[in-house]
Amino acid sequence: MLSLYASAFGSYAPNLFHLIDSKPVSFHIYASGIIIIATAINYYSLKIVGEIETYAVVIKLLILLAFVVIGIYGLFGNPNLNQLSPQNWESTINLITGGMVIFVAYEGFELIANAVPDIENPKKNIPKAYYYSVIFVIFLYIIIAAVTVGSLPFNKIAAAKDYVLAEAAKPMIGEIGFTIITIAALISTFSAINASLYGGSRVSYEIADDDELPHQLTGLLWNHPVGLMITTILTLLLVNAVNLESISTAGSVGFILIFTFVNYASFKLSKTINGNKTIPLTGFILGLAALIILIVQQYTSNRFGVILAISIVFVCFISEYVYKRTVQNNVYKK
Image (cartoon, rainbow, N blue to C red; front, side, top):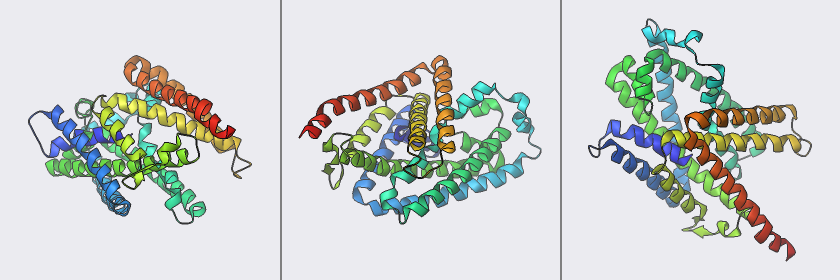
C-alpha cells in the first residue's frame, strides 16, 4: 500500500515541479523521496505525525468538496455527460473487477483499528469512526468518479490515468484547478504514507509481542519498532521495481483477502465479542466471491500483478507456518 501511495505521489509531483527533464527519473526520485521523508518524520515525533494527519485530512477534504461542488455545476451542458449513461458502461463483471482493483482505496479504514491503543474510549469511538467515515467516503468516491467521467472524454481519462483528477479539474477552472487538485493529491498521498508507516510498524510490533511473529520484531531502532525500518526498505524496493497497476492489483488482492477473513473471524467469534453474525458472514461471502472474480479476470489482463499478489500471500503463509512449527513450538515446550 505504501508503494501504491508513493507511486501516486511520484506520478502527480512532476506535473507541479520538474526536477529533471526525464519524467520516469523524476517519478523515482519523488516516490523514493517522499517515503524517506515520511519515515524520518515518524522517527522524529509521533506527535507531529498526528498533527500532520489532522491538517492534511482537513485540507484535502476541503479541496475535494470544492472539486465536487464546482464539478457538479460544470456538468450541466458538458458534452461528456452522456458517458455516465448505462449504455456506455462496461459489462457487469468488468465493473466488479474494476471496483476490486481499486479496493485499496478503502485500506485506510484499517488504520482506525490499528490505532486502538492510542484512542480514548475505543469501545465507543471506534464504531462511530467506522460508520461515519465509511459512509461519507463511499458517497464522496461515487460523486468524484461521476464528476470525473462526466467532465472528460474517455480518451483523455485514459491518457491522464496517473493524474486524472487534476486533469478533470481543467475544464472547470483551467490550469489553476489542475494545480490545486495536484496539490491535494500530493497532500493526500503523503498523509496516507505517513499514517500507514505509523500503523504498519505498530501492527508488526503487536503481532510479534503476541508471539505470532518472531519476537525480535518487538525490538526498537531509534526508540521505534524495527518494523518501521523494514517496512520502509521493502516499500522502496517495490515502488522502484513494479508498475502502478501491478502494485494496485497486488494490494487489492491482499486487502480483500485480509478483510474477508477478518469478517470470517468476526462470524466465528460472534458470541465471544457479542456481535452480529449476519453482517460478517455476508462480508465473508462477498469478499471471497470478489477475490475469485478479481484473480480470474486480472490473470488475463495483468498476469504479473496477480502472480505478485499470490507470491506475497504464499510467502507470508509459508513464513508463518515455518515459524509456528519451529520457534513457537519451542517456546511452548519451554
